[in-house]
Image 1 (tube, rainbow, N blue to C red):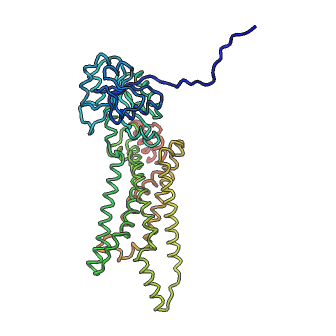
Image 2 (image 1 turned 90 degrees about the vertical axis):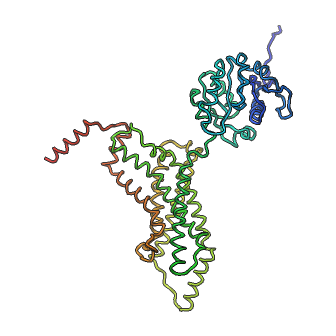
Length: 471
């Protein structure tokens, strides 16, 4: 007796086709997005003013008029500028109930009173508007997600429509980030127009510090020598002065990374609560600490490079040669100064260790590394090792100066050396941190950060206990 069996093939020749998506516009971004979506299995229909097929259109895509293209899909990606939205009014009925994805950007921040997506929702109240893809460039779509940012900000008032767009984003190998309702569209549209928003203040500060220290060194080491001793030291501008600017700026910026945290701790102790906002300037300062540290690391790298070329400088080789010849002519060899040798070796050793930890701080601040460690590990590196780095770099600078600050000749025109100026802020930070780690201060600060609040009753009880103790 024969049995009828149904054979199920292990493989299939039918491609994994997805839904049809309509794209209004045939510009660079529209074509790049369409090509990428076709690679991921979507059928693409372009809506254009001219329904003729162009050689620029990806092979396999269809080009129709706007009205005909809108009929083919429930998802329409609008890749045209806001100034050309007027043609959509004639398609209001065709677009009713469809998901309309706005990918437009403006020429400047806050160019219009409302965002482009909100304006589109007002223009087409029957459509479900979602903002997406405006942070991705045509170049990124062509070159692949690995060569550019993978994040795509998405916002919209209809959750189902937003989820459908986010699924398209995932299928393209990108990472959708839900920013909430359509009210977030303004922030999303302003994002691509910002030029290093978190780097602006650190870079400005580093440039101002560099310019001040540079001109300070020029006056102290070049102008003074020429005015008082008629000696030309203008060549110091090439290497000597930059090699004083870089370590000074690096040390000051590293101290400024930890100074706002100390200010925040003092403010919380004074207020007796953590549930009050910090001043706006302190908030901004704390948000850009990572950028301050990375800029400081860049200056430290320059300091290392400038230091490595010291032996091949003409001025240095001339001084060594002159010193050797003077010893030969005088038939006298100066004995080794053990104290100076210890200071020199300790100065170099602390500099190497400080720079090593500085690089470690920079590596752990990278997203790919910081995402792979837990909070306790990250805090250990960025806080404890960070302060250790500041201590090593500060002592490194102190040993560099040695006893020279006691020499009156080290103050031409009563101007102290740059290394003395660079030690002011780091020493203040370390001194304040030293007092904050005392148990009598650290314990109440820890309680405040865990949610305890000082009330008027607590203050009165504390005062009465002090009075009883005095009696």
